[in-house]
Amino acid sequence: MSIQPVILAGGTGSRLWPLSRELYPKQVISLAGDLSLLQTTLQRVSELPDILPPIIVVGEEHRFLTKTQVEELNLFPAYHILLEPLGRNTAPAICGAAFFARKESEQDPVLLVLPADHLISKKQEFNQAVERAVELAGDGHLATFGIVPDHPETGYGYIARGEGDKVASFVEKPDLETAKRYLAEGSYLWNSGMFAFSVNSLLEEMEKYSPKIVQAMGKSVEQGRFDGVFFRFEHELMQESPSDSIDYALMEKTDRAVVVQADIGWSDIGSWLALWEVSKKDERGNVASGDVLLEDVDNSLIRSEDTLVAAVGLKDTIVIETADAVLVAPMDRSQDVKKIVSRLKKEKRDEFHIHKTVYGPWGSYTTLEMHGRFQIKRITVNPGAKLSLQMHHHRHEHWVVVAGTAKVVNGEESILLHEDESTYISAGTQHRLENPGVIPLELIEVQIGSYLGEDDIVRYDDVYGRNT
Image 1 (cartoon, rainbow, N blue to C red):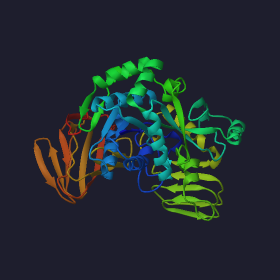
Image 2 (image 1 turned 90 degrees about the vertical axis):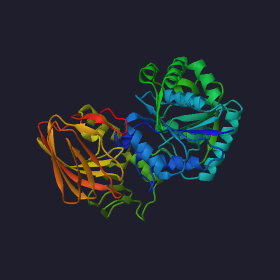
Image 3 (image 1 turned 90 degrees about the horizontal axis):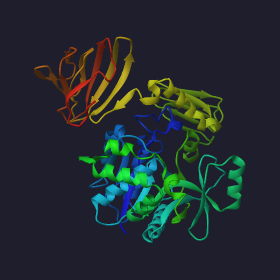
Image 4 (image 1 turned 120 degrees about the vertical axis):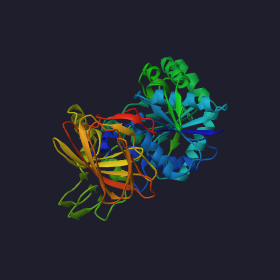
């Protein structure tokens, strides 16, 4: 049977703050190696036989980052990115992907549902597990992948195996003593959140156990719209769908659930401790990356993104540095990082939402200085890319080109600026920035005004289809 990969690339990875943030989540970050977790997942499925163009389900705000990362791989002649206008958990996302797959193909393919943020080190064993899951799905079963545990883990749900391939039950995250008992009994597997089922089998069972999700997502796909490689679920119809996980909505209720035992070197990289566990360590058990100096440090994870980090006399400690935040925590408190993220969100601090560097479909900008009435940014525009034709009500802008060539629309004027040349754009003036060259355009932007928020922007024309 044909395999339809469905990659779930939503979520923010709050326990990996300050690196993972709402607008730059963990699945698009390179945490282990040169590729991001999303790219690693796509590379993994590209090696499977008889696959259809992959379907990637993401939130609207991550669409351009996702598109860029897929195209950097150059693995697929075709692919689809399904855009969720709002988060509704995994059941509506998977159900929507199933309706979309049915819309695109007359076949009844097997949906291979994979989260975008997992690491799997044993490729051959993974391929074998997928082959078995596809076989079971072809017989009408709903297959989930159960990971063979190697330690008593309290951060995962468990699957109790029944006779043959049957699932006896799904179990919530246990306390430590219960997790130890599960490990000793040998009949419990970690719940990986990976699945395989045919489109028809999934929708039949969803109709039986979660009909409201099926009705809402079916209509949302029917009235959705294409935008190049993007497909947008219809917003108001998706909003009618209950928010539920695929486990609660279906897998815990159906009598067609089976489990494939998988010893595949799996980790969901759900915390800094999980990343330390799967990473290559030095002779003292440390995992260090970036500009890091260690003196008498053991069993620690030290990561520098922006500046020198020097550590002395630490043991079992996490230190993560970014341009605007530093996390320091004992290794065994790595799950509690999400408490910091909750506080940042409650206090509406930018450190929850964005980094100093923000990526767009055209390139990126980095905030270098920010004060009450002025801020300074470094802007990078990719070759051939251009920003929207836009206007600001409250701020004036000075642009100085430091590398490359800029084509600038400034009111009625259109000019070319080269290195060490500049222009001034007053508030209320329509303007546009474009890179007509073959190397990245870099410029320094100085903004001055009474209000400098990113929402002070009126777009008149945008090649990327953005309204705000």
